[in-house]
Structure formats: C-alpha cells, structure tokens
Amino acid sequence: MATLTTLHRNSNLNQSANQLLHSRDGAAQILGVHARTVDNLVKRGHLHPTPIGSRVMFHKDELARFAREGAAVIGATYNE
Image (cartoon, rainbow, N blue to C red):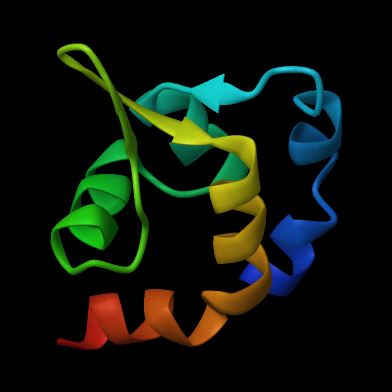
C-alpha cells in the first residue's frame, strides 16, 4: 500500500480538483484505502465528513489535509 505522502501527490486527487465533495467510496479511492478504513478514520475523529442531508460527503480540502497530515494516523489505525 502506498504511503499517504505519496497519495498527496496522487493523480486521483489532482484529477478530482474540480469536484468539491466526494462520497465515502470516492474518498477511499482518492486516499488509496478501503471504504471501511474511511469509516474507521471518521469514527476515530481523524477524517471529518461534511453531512449533506442524509448523505455523508468529504470535501476535497479535508481529503487533501488528511493526505498531508495523516500518515501517522493510518498506521495507528491498523496497529490499535
């Protein structure tokens, strides 16, 4: 699995620059993790969704923040 430092430069994030909000599956694809990992990161307070009605979406800036700052978090998520 790629590191989050690598994922920050991932072309998926750059290609999605015009899209402001992403679904859970879209966020997982951008971050290069499984959708369940996105759920776990939200549950642990490491990734912050934007509720839109009954949907849970992720703003592109939040995904970029996590890609920059979350490298240690994802390791801790799997080690706990």
